[in-house]
Image (cartoon, rainbow, N blue to C red):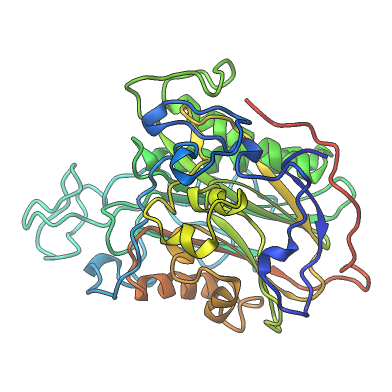
Length: 444
């Protein structure tokens, strides 16, 4: 069994123990597993597979990710206060002007286009100013009369695939741009089984061009995943390959040929574009998740009896807890808690996606999100309370509501949420269906 492949598990209704009890990692799971041995600050390199440090100060260095602690809400920015003020919105299978997320990856006839949140300018040149209504927007995205910066296409983006999956991304109330991106896709396996997926990427703010990193990662995953599924690749392998393709695309942003570059090679004086990635794929009664970084997937059943977090963060705090060096309370109280130990980019130590498969045993929803949301609803129980009761039947309004939940909490970060409804599993589907597949270790 590979270090990052977890046996099939099923969220169950009782008892409602620690959500992470769903995980059954093999004996190799630890602080330096899955390639979480991380490079030093600004691209220096750590040692993969090194022994566990004796105390936290000796832990592998991490990359800051700018995750401020939540604070009391403040007055929202006028052009970004509510879902109605969208720069590109959609309520059907057709994505907005800056979106097109369902595009080439979808088999539902949705409009093709760049990944959601793809880089774009502010406003439209020559359009009336949204602030003063007197001047027009110049080439720099500012009003030529009052100088007000216009909303970017990427500030707020929504997309939905015919009720199968929906997602919303928003700039938040503190950041000057949205560095998150997402993509949605729907296809079918060779045997006719429908497959629907959401991929969410979060740009690393301490890196250069984080908005571009998240956008190209989402686009690469969208191009890779459906094609692999239709060709008959095993679901786990298809998802793994999509994450690897996303990593290669981000690496290429730094001027490195992702096909030839060896991860972990020193790159002095370069702070390469970087982002995290998380994905969830529903195919029949099976849920497969994959990730690198600290964006998360949650399972929230309709009856709310046993919600669960299905991913484990690539972060300093998680590494300390996994290694038994600190308690969870101690680790998350440390200023380094949210520093990430895994990401996509040329200065990443290794590209090693985590893949896990689950069999939900009842109707519910899968929540895929960045830390812009989970910072305000960190535990599975808190997330379940935030998810609207009708989320499974109305995924787009549910995604909007969860974004609003984060904005009401302070909106300190960009926030992206995808909602995948799961209608139910046949009798007996709650039982594990077997071990991990034989997909090889995916590195680049």
